Image (tube, rainbow, N blue to C red; front, side, top):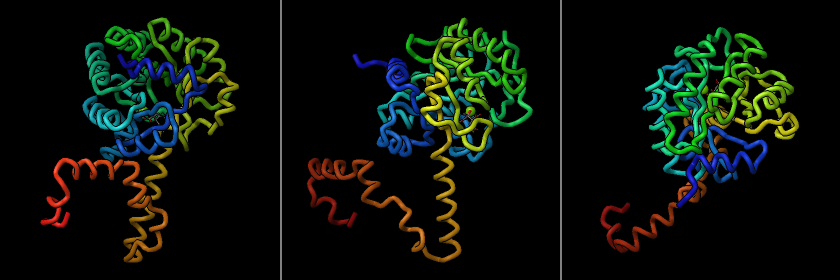
Length: 298
Ligand SMILES: C[C@](O)(C(=O)O)[C@H](CC(=O)O)C(=O)O
Ligand SMILES: [Mg+2]
C-alpha cells in the first residue's frame, strides 16, 4: 500500500532540512510548484480567503471553503500538502470534523493556532489568543480525531506578540505534551528564537517567511543553522502572480493591446506542457478517431 500523505510529509521533513513549503492557491499553481522540485506544498488560510474569495484573512472563510481548495490541489498533484486550519473552525467536535474532512480531502497535516476565533493575520497588531488550556484542548481534540497516526498535527502559537517569548515556549511545550507533532511559532523577528524553540520542544519547528511581515526573509542556510525544520513561503507566488496580473490588466486597459506585456506571459505551449494537453488530445484521437472533431472545427 502507498504511504499516506502524512507519512510522506514526515519523510520529507526528515530528508530535507529545512523542508521548503511553498503556498499554492489553486491546482495549477500547485502543478507549477511541483515542477520546480518542491517535496511538499502548503495551502494558506490567507490564500483561500484572499485568492478564492477576495476576502481578508480574518476568520471569515469556513472549513468547507478550505476543503474545496485542498481537494482540487490534492487531485492535481502528488505531493503531501500541509493545510492552514486557522483556529480549527470551532470547538472540540468541530475540530475533529476539521481533521476528518481535511484527511479525506487528501491533506497530509494541518496547523491549528491559539488565536481567538475572530483571528487576524499573525503579523498584524492587536491579536488576541485563547488560554493555554483552551489551546491544549484544541490540540488534544485534533490528535484524538486523526485516523492515520502519521497525519501531522502542528500547533501554531501567536503568543510571542501577545504574551512574550517565555509564555509562547511554555505553550509550545504544552502542545507537544498534548500530542502536537510540530511547532509553528508565529511572527518571529530574530533567528535565535527558532533555536530556542527547537531546543525547548524537540520536534520540528516551522519558520514562516511571509513577506512584508515581522520575520526577516532568512535564507535556507540561516534557518538550517538555527535548527529550523520547515521553511514556509505561504503567499510568495500569490503576491507575484497578483502583481503580474494587475500589470497586464492595466496595460490592456490603457494601451488597448497586450503587445507590451505578451513576453511576460506563459505561452500556450508551456501551459499545455504542464497540463499534458497533448496526451489528452492523443487519447481522444485514439478513442474516437480524428474525423469526429472535423464538423465543429474544435
Ligand atoms: C501563514 C498565514 O497564516 C497564512 O494564512 O498563509 C499568514 C500569512 C500572512 O498573512 O502573511 C500568517 O502569517 O498569519
Ligand atoms: Mg493563516
